[in-house]
Image (tube, rainbow, N blue to C red; front, side, top):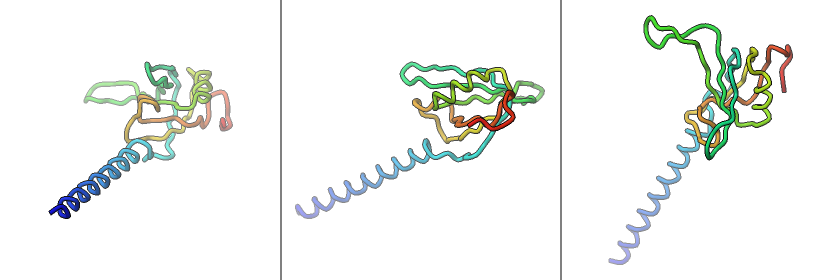
Length: 136
């Protein structure tokens, strides 16, 4: 009888470990693997701000040309809200506020508090109004 009880406990432990590993793998893929690897957006950089209570992150908004409508007959500016996880890049963007820029970003399935408030993470500036060439 003790042998069956021990076998049953091992089965439950192995099943629990498999479910835990699958849960961690799903969490990792959902939050850390981008599914829009090489995307760019262009427009006028509206603002970059450093905000947060526990996790201080850089958040920004890009105003794109044209208008979009959420409802029929309505009109709204086409805004792109993003996060920046690189402090040096955020300071470069702060200097470009109000200028036309092209930004490269990665899109994730979900946002993490220490990475930013949005699922869009800007990782580089392709070009700006002041520079014809690519900014490193």
